[in-house]
Amino acid sequence: MDEGEGVNLNRDPDDPEKEGGTVTVGTEYQVTVTDVLKGDVKQDEIFVSVQGGSYQNQKAPLKSTLEKGKTYLFFLFVAAQGPPHYYDGTQPNIFEISKDKVELVTNVEQYRQTFQDVNLSKTAFYSNLKQAIQSTEQ
Image (tube, rainbow, N blue to C red; front, side):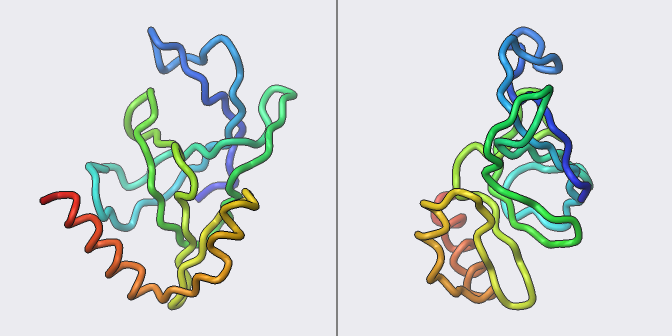
């Protein structure tokens, strides 16, 4: 993953490759994909846009801070530009995966408080998640 770059999340509805008229500040990270639990991601690397950051002298609070060298689990939506661009449409949606622990990654206090006492092992988290995914596919 790279360090992240400021972007305008607002896209032109007629040409999503171009920016829209107003600026919605975001930060885009280039992320290496190692596993896809659900969805149709075919790329080895994708671009993940997180709300907030700095772009063209405008700033907004960064909703999640990602760090190079860490492993994350994302719940993403396809961006208007299409793959390989994705965004963090709802919160919470990014979790850090470490040895045997899963932690929410957010700068939003409301979500940090909600998840602060959750100490779910990686095995239990993935098991619960896979069950939830399977139940939506039936």
